[in-house]
Amino acid sequence: MLNNYGQYPYGGYMPLNNGYNNQPSMSQQMSFVNGIEGAKGFIVPPNTSVLLMDSDAQQFFIKTADRNGMCNIKAYSFQEEQLDKTNQPIDTDKFVTREEFNKFIESVNNLITQNNAANEPTKKALI
Image (cartoon, rainbow, N blue to C red; front, side, top):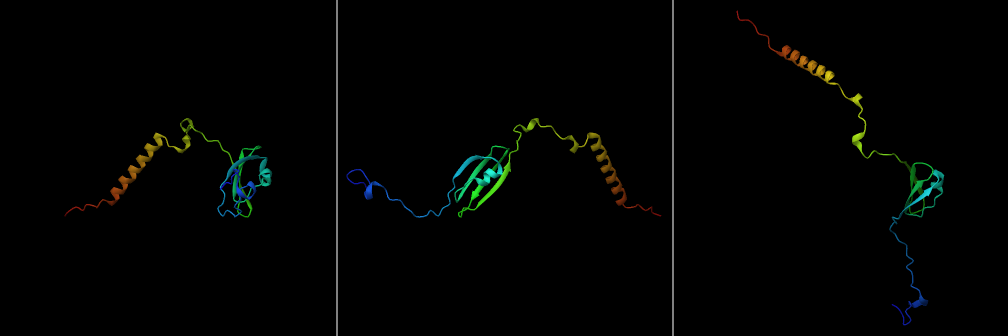
């Protein structure tokens, strides 16, 4: 709704809607801080979460402000993950050797044989 001079009415500006937005904003940003004290001092607008990278250590913080501006900080640390898991050494202490396995099988077979012999009915001789 422009007038003849290409301007909006009311003195050349567009009137703003000053109503409050009831939906929380989901803006995400990342900033660098110096330790937990830097994260505590970082100002976060209401209904916002920010990722704060620690420039001094291998950790990061997620600082979240609720609609009243009350903040909550969670700290996390970085841990390197191996991308190629095929080259990792195998812990052989958790495995049994072939000799130990064969001894175990032999002891199980002996127990089965003893159990079958004990449960076999006794044969009485006919007189």
